[in-house]
Length: 336
Image 1 (cartoon, rainbow, N blue to C red):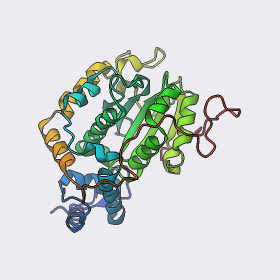
Image 2 (image 1 turned 90 degrees about the vertical axis):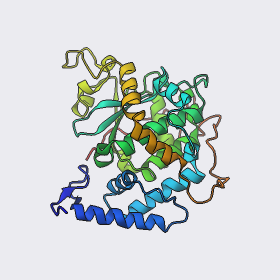
Image 3 (image 1 turned 45 degrees about the vertical axis):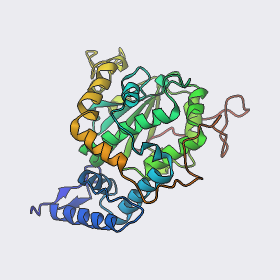
C-alpha cells in the first residue's frame, strides 16, 4: 500500500496521513463503533471518512462528534430524519419550489469549497408552503448530500452565503430561540462538516438580533468567520467568484459579462436531479435514515422541534421597540 504522505484534508495542511495511516484510523473507528451499544453499526466508508476528516483524524474528537450525531438522531433535533424518504414528494417539492432556502451552488469558492446559498428572503414564514418540521427535514437532506456525498466538502469545508434581503422578525419567530440554538450547536459539534466562511449580504438589524440570539452556542472561531457585507459585494468577490453566483445575484458593477452559474431554478433542478436523486445517493441516505441509535425511546426533555411563539431575549438580546439599539456584533472576519 502507498506510503506517500497525502493531505487528509486540504483545510488542514499540517494533517498529513499515508494511506496506511488512513486505513488504520478508519479500522480503529469502525471497531470502536461496533462496541458502542448507543451507536448503530452503520459503518459505511463515506460516513467514517467524513467524520474523520472533519476532526483531522483525531480519534477522540471523531468519536465524540459521531456520538453526538447519533444521540441527536435518537433524542434531539435530528430525530425527525428517522425513516425519512429523501425522494418523497414533500421533500422534492420544497427543494424545487419557489420557497426553497438552502441551495448548493455548482461552483466552488476561491479556496475550492462548496458554496451553499441560503435565501432567507424566500422562507415561507406563513406555514402555507411547509411546516417547520417539513422544512427542517428538507434542508437536512441538502446538508447530508453535501456532507457525505461531496468528498471535497468534508475535506475542505463549506462556505455559506446568506441572503438576508427582506428578512423580518417573523423569520426569527419561524425558527424559535431553542430551535435556532439547537441547529447551530448541532452543526458545530455533531455534524461531519466544517463551516469555513459565512457571508451575509443584504443584512439588516434583524440579522444582528439573530446573531445575538445564537451567540450562546456560537464558537468564537465560527463567529470570527462571519462577514457582514450589506448591499456591497466587493469584499465578497474576494472569496467567492462572481461566476459561482446565480445570474440574478450579479450586480451591474461586477467585472463580469453578467453570466453566472445560471438561473436559480436551473441550479436547484441540477442539484436535485444530478446529486440528490442519483441512485447511489438515494441508497445511502435511505440506509442512513433507517439506522437507529440505541433505544428508540426519545428523551422527553429534548424531543421534538416545537415551534415557539417568539425567540425570547437572552443575555442582553434586544428586540425591536426596546430602548437600546442593537449593534453589529461581527464587524471583522477571520477566515484562517
